Image (cartoon, rainbow, N blue to C red; front, side):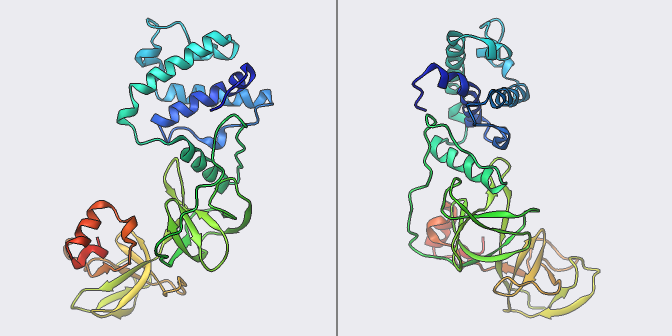
Length: 315
């Protein structure tokens, strides 16, 4: 942050505390409830209210730095406290953070603020940071070495926004509704649309709840014909079969795959069980054959790929 006046510090105080808490408890703060319109007294009161709730949830009063035997400073007194007490409180927050960040997930402030803005915008809440809260409006563009065309489907209950750029503060140029399909390329937590302009944020950062799901490609590896069912149940009506070597496309749902065509169209409901009926779950009848970009593979997948295993695409 680039705080230069007492006023900026006063109106941003609860947000500063929330940023520090967010670095250790990344899924606690619901940033959609935070009001960054610093010129309004009601916004400041709302931010203090959210801060007090999270403070109680994570038992901050029991942390060594804030126990009554070590400090007289109390969060509930901060709105009416003077500048000196607020500065001392932030110093305690800093000490609290320094004792814990080694065991927390890696935290990069500018990247996190971009993610906050993108997540809030995906649910219709635009974040406008004050000038003194440093942030990057856009992530530096990286041209992927290989564009993988994948098909996706919206699984969020409500519509999700299509943004003009890979930034949570960019212009909304469209939307996708539940069950809509589209073609795109994954870049981190974003999907670049390939057959139309725009970007989509693919999950809610705080809860990691998926907003879209990726269509997978499967190969039938059972020597026996595999049934295609009308519903995801072995007691449902059988409407077809697939034989060894057949390729199918679909969206995984537990042990079942909801079948689609290659372009993502589902048509009448069709399902296949990944495992043989009544058999061991150790043996599959469907094996994932989706291609994956080497550069985005986890390290263990890269090792298997490097060793030449044909299983590297199916793990």
